[in-house]
Image (cartoon, rainbow, N blue to C red; front, side, top):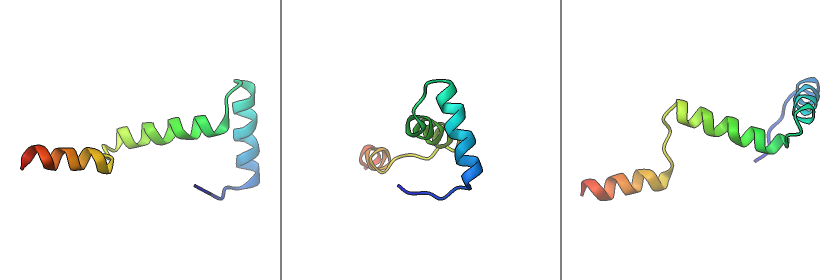
Length: 55
């Protein structure tokens, strides 16, 4: 996945992650997972399992 963000935002994010000894990619993945959970978005495999259980 590629994304474009403003340089100053990237620098702030990089610095904040570095201060906590965190990898930026790991933090992004965690944020995406939290967003998906909060928005109840299910993976295609979960949806398929649900359809199989209903039929």
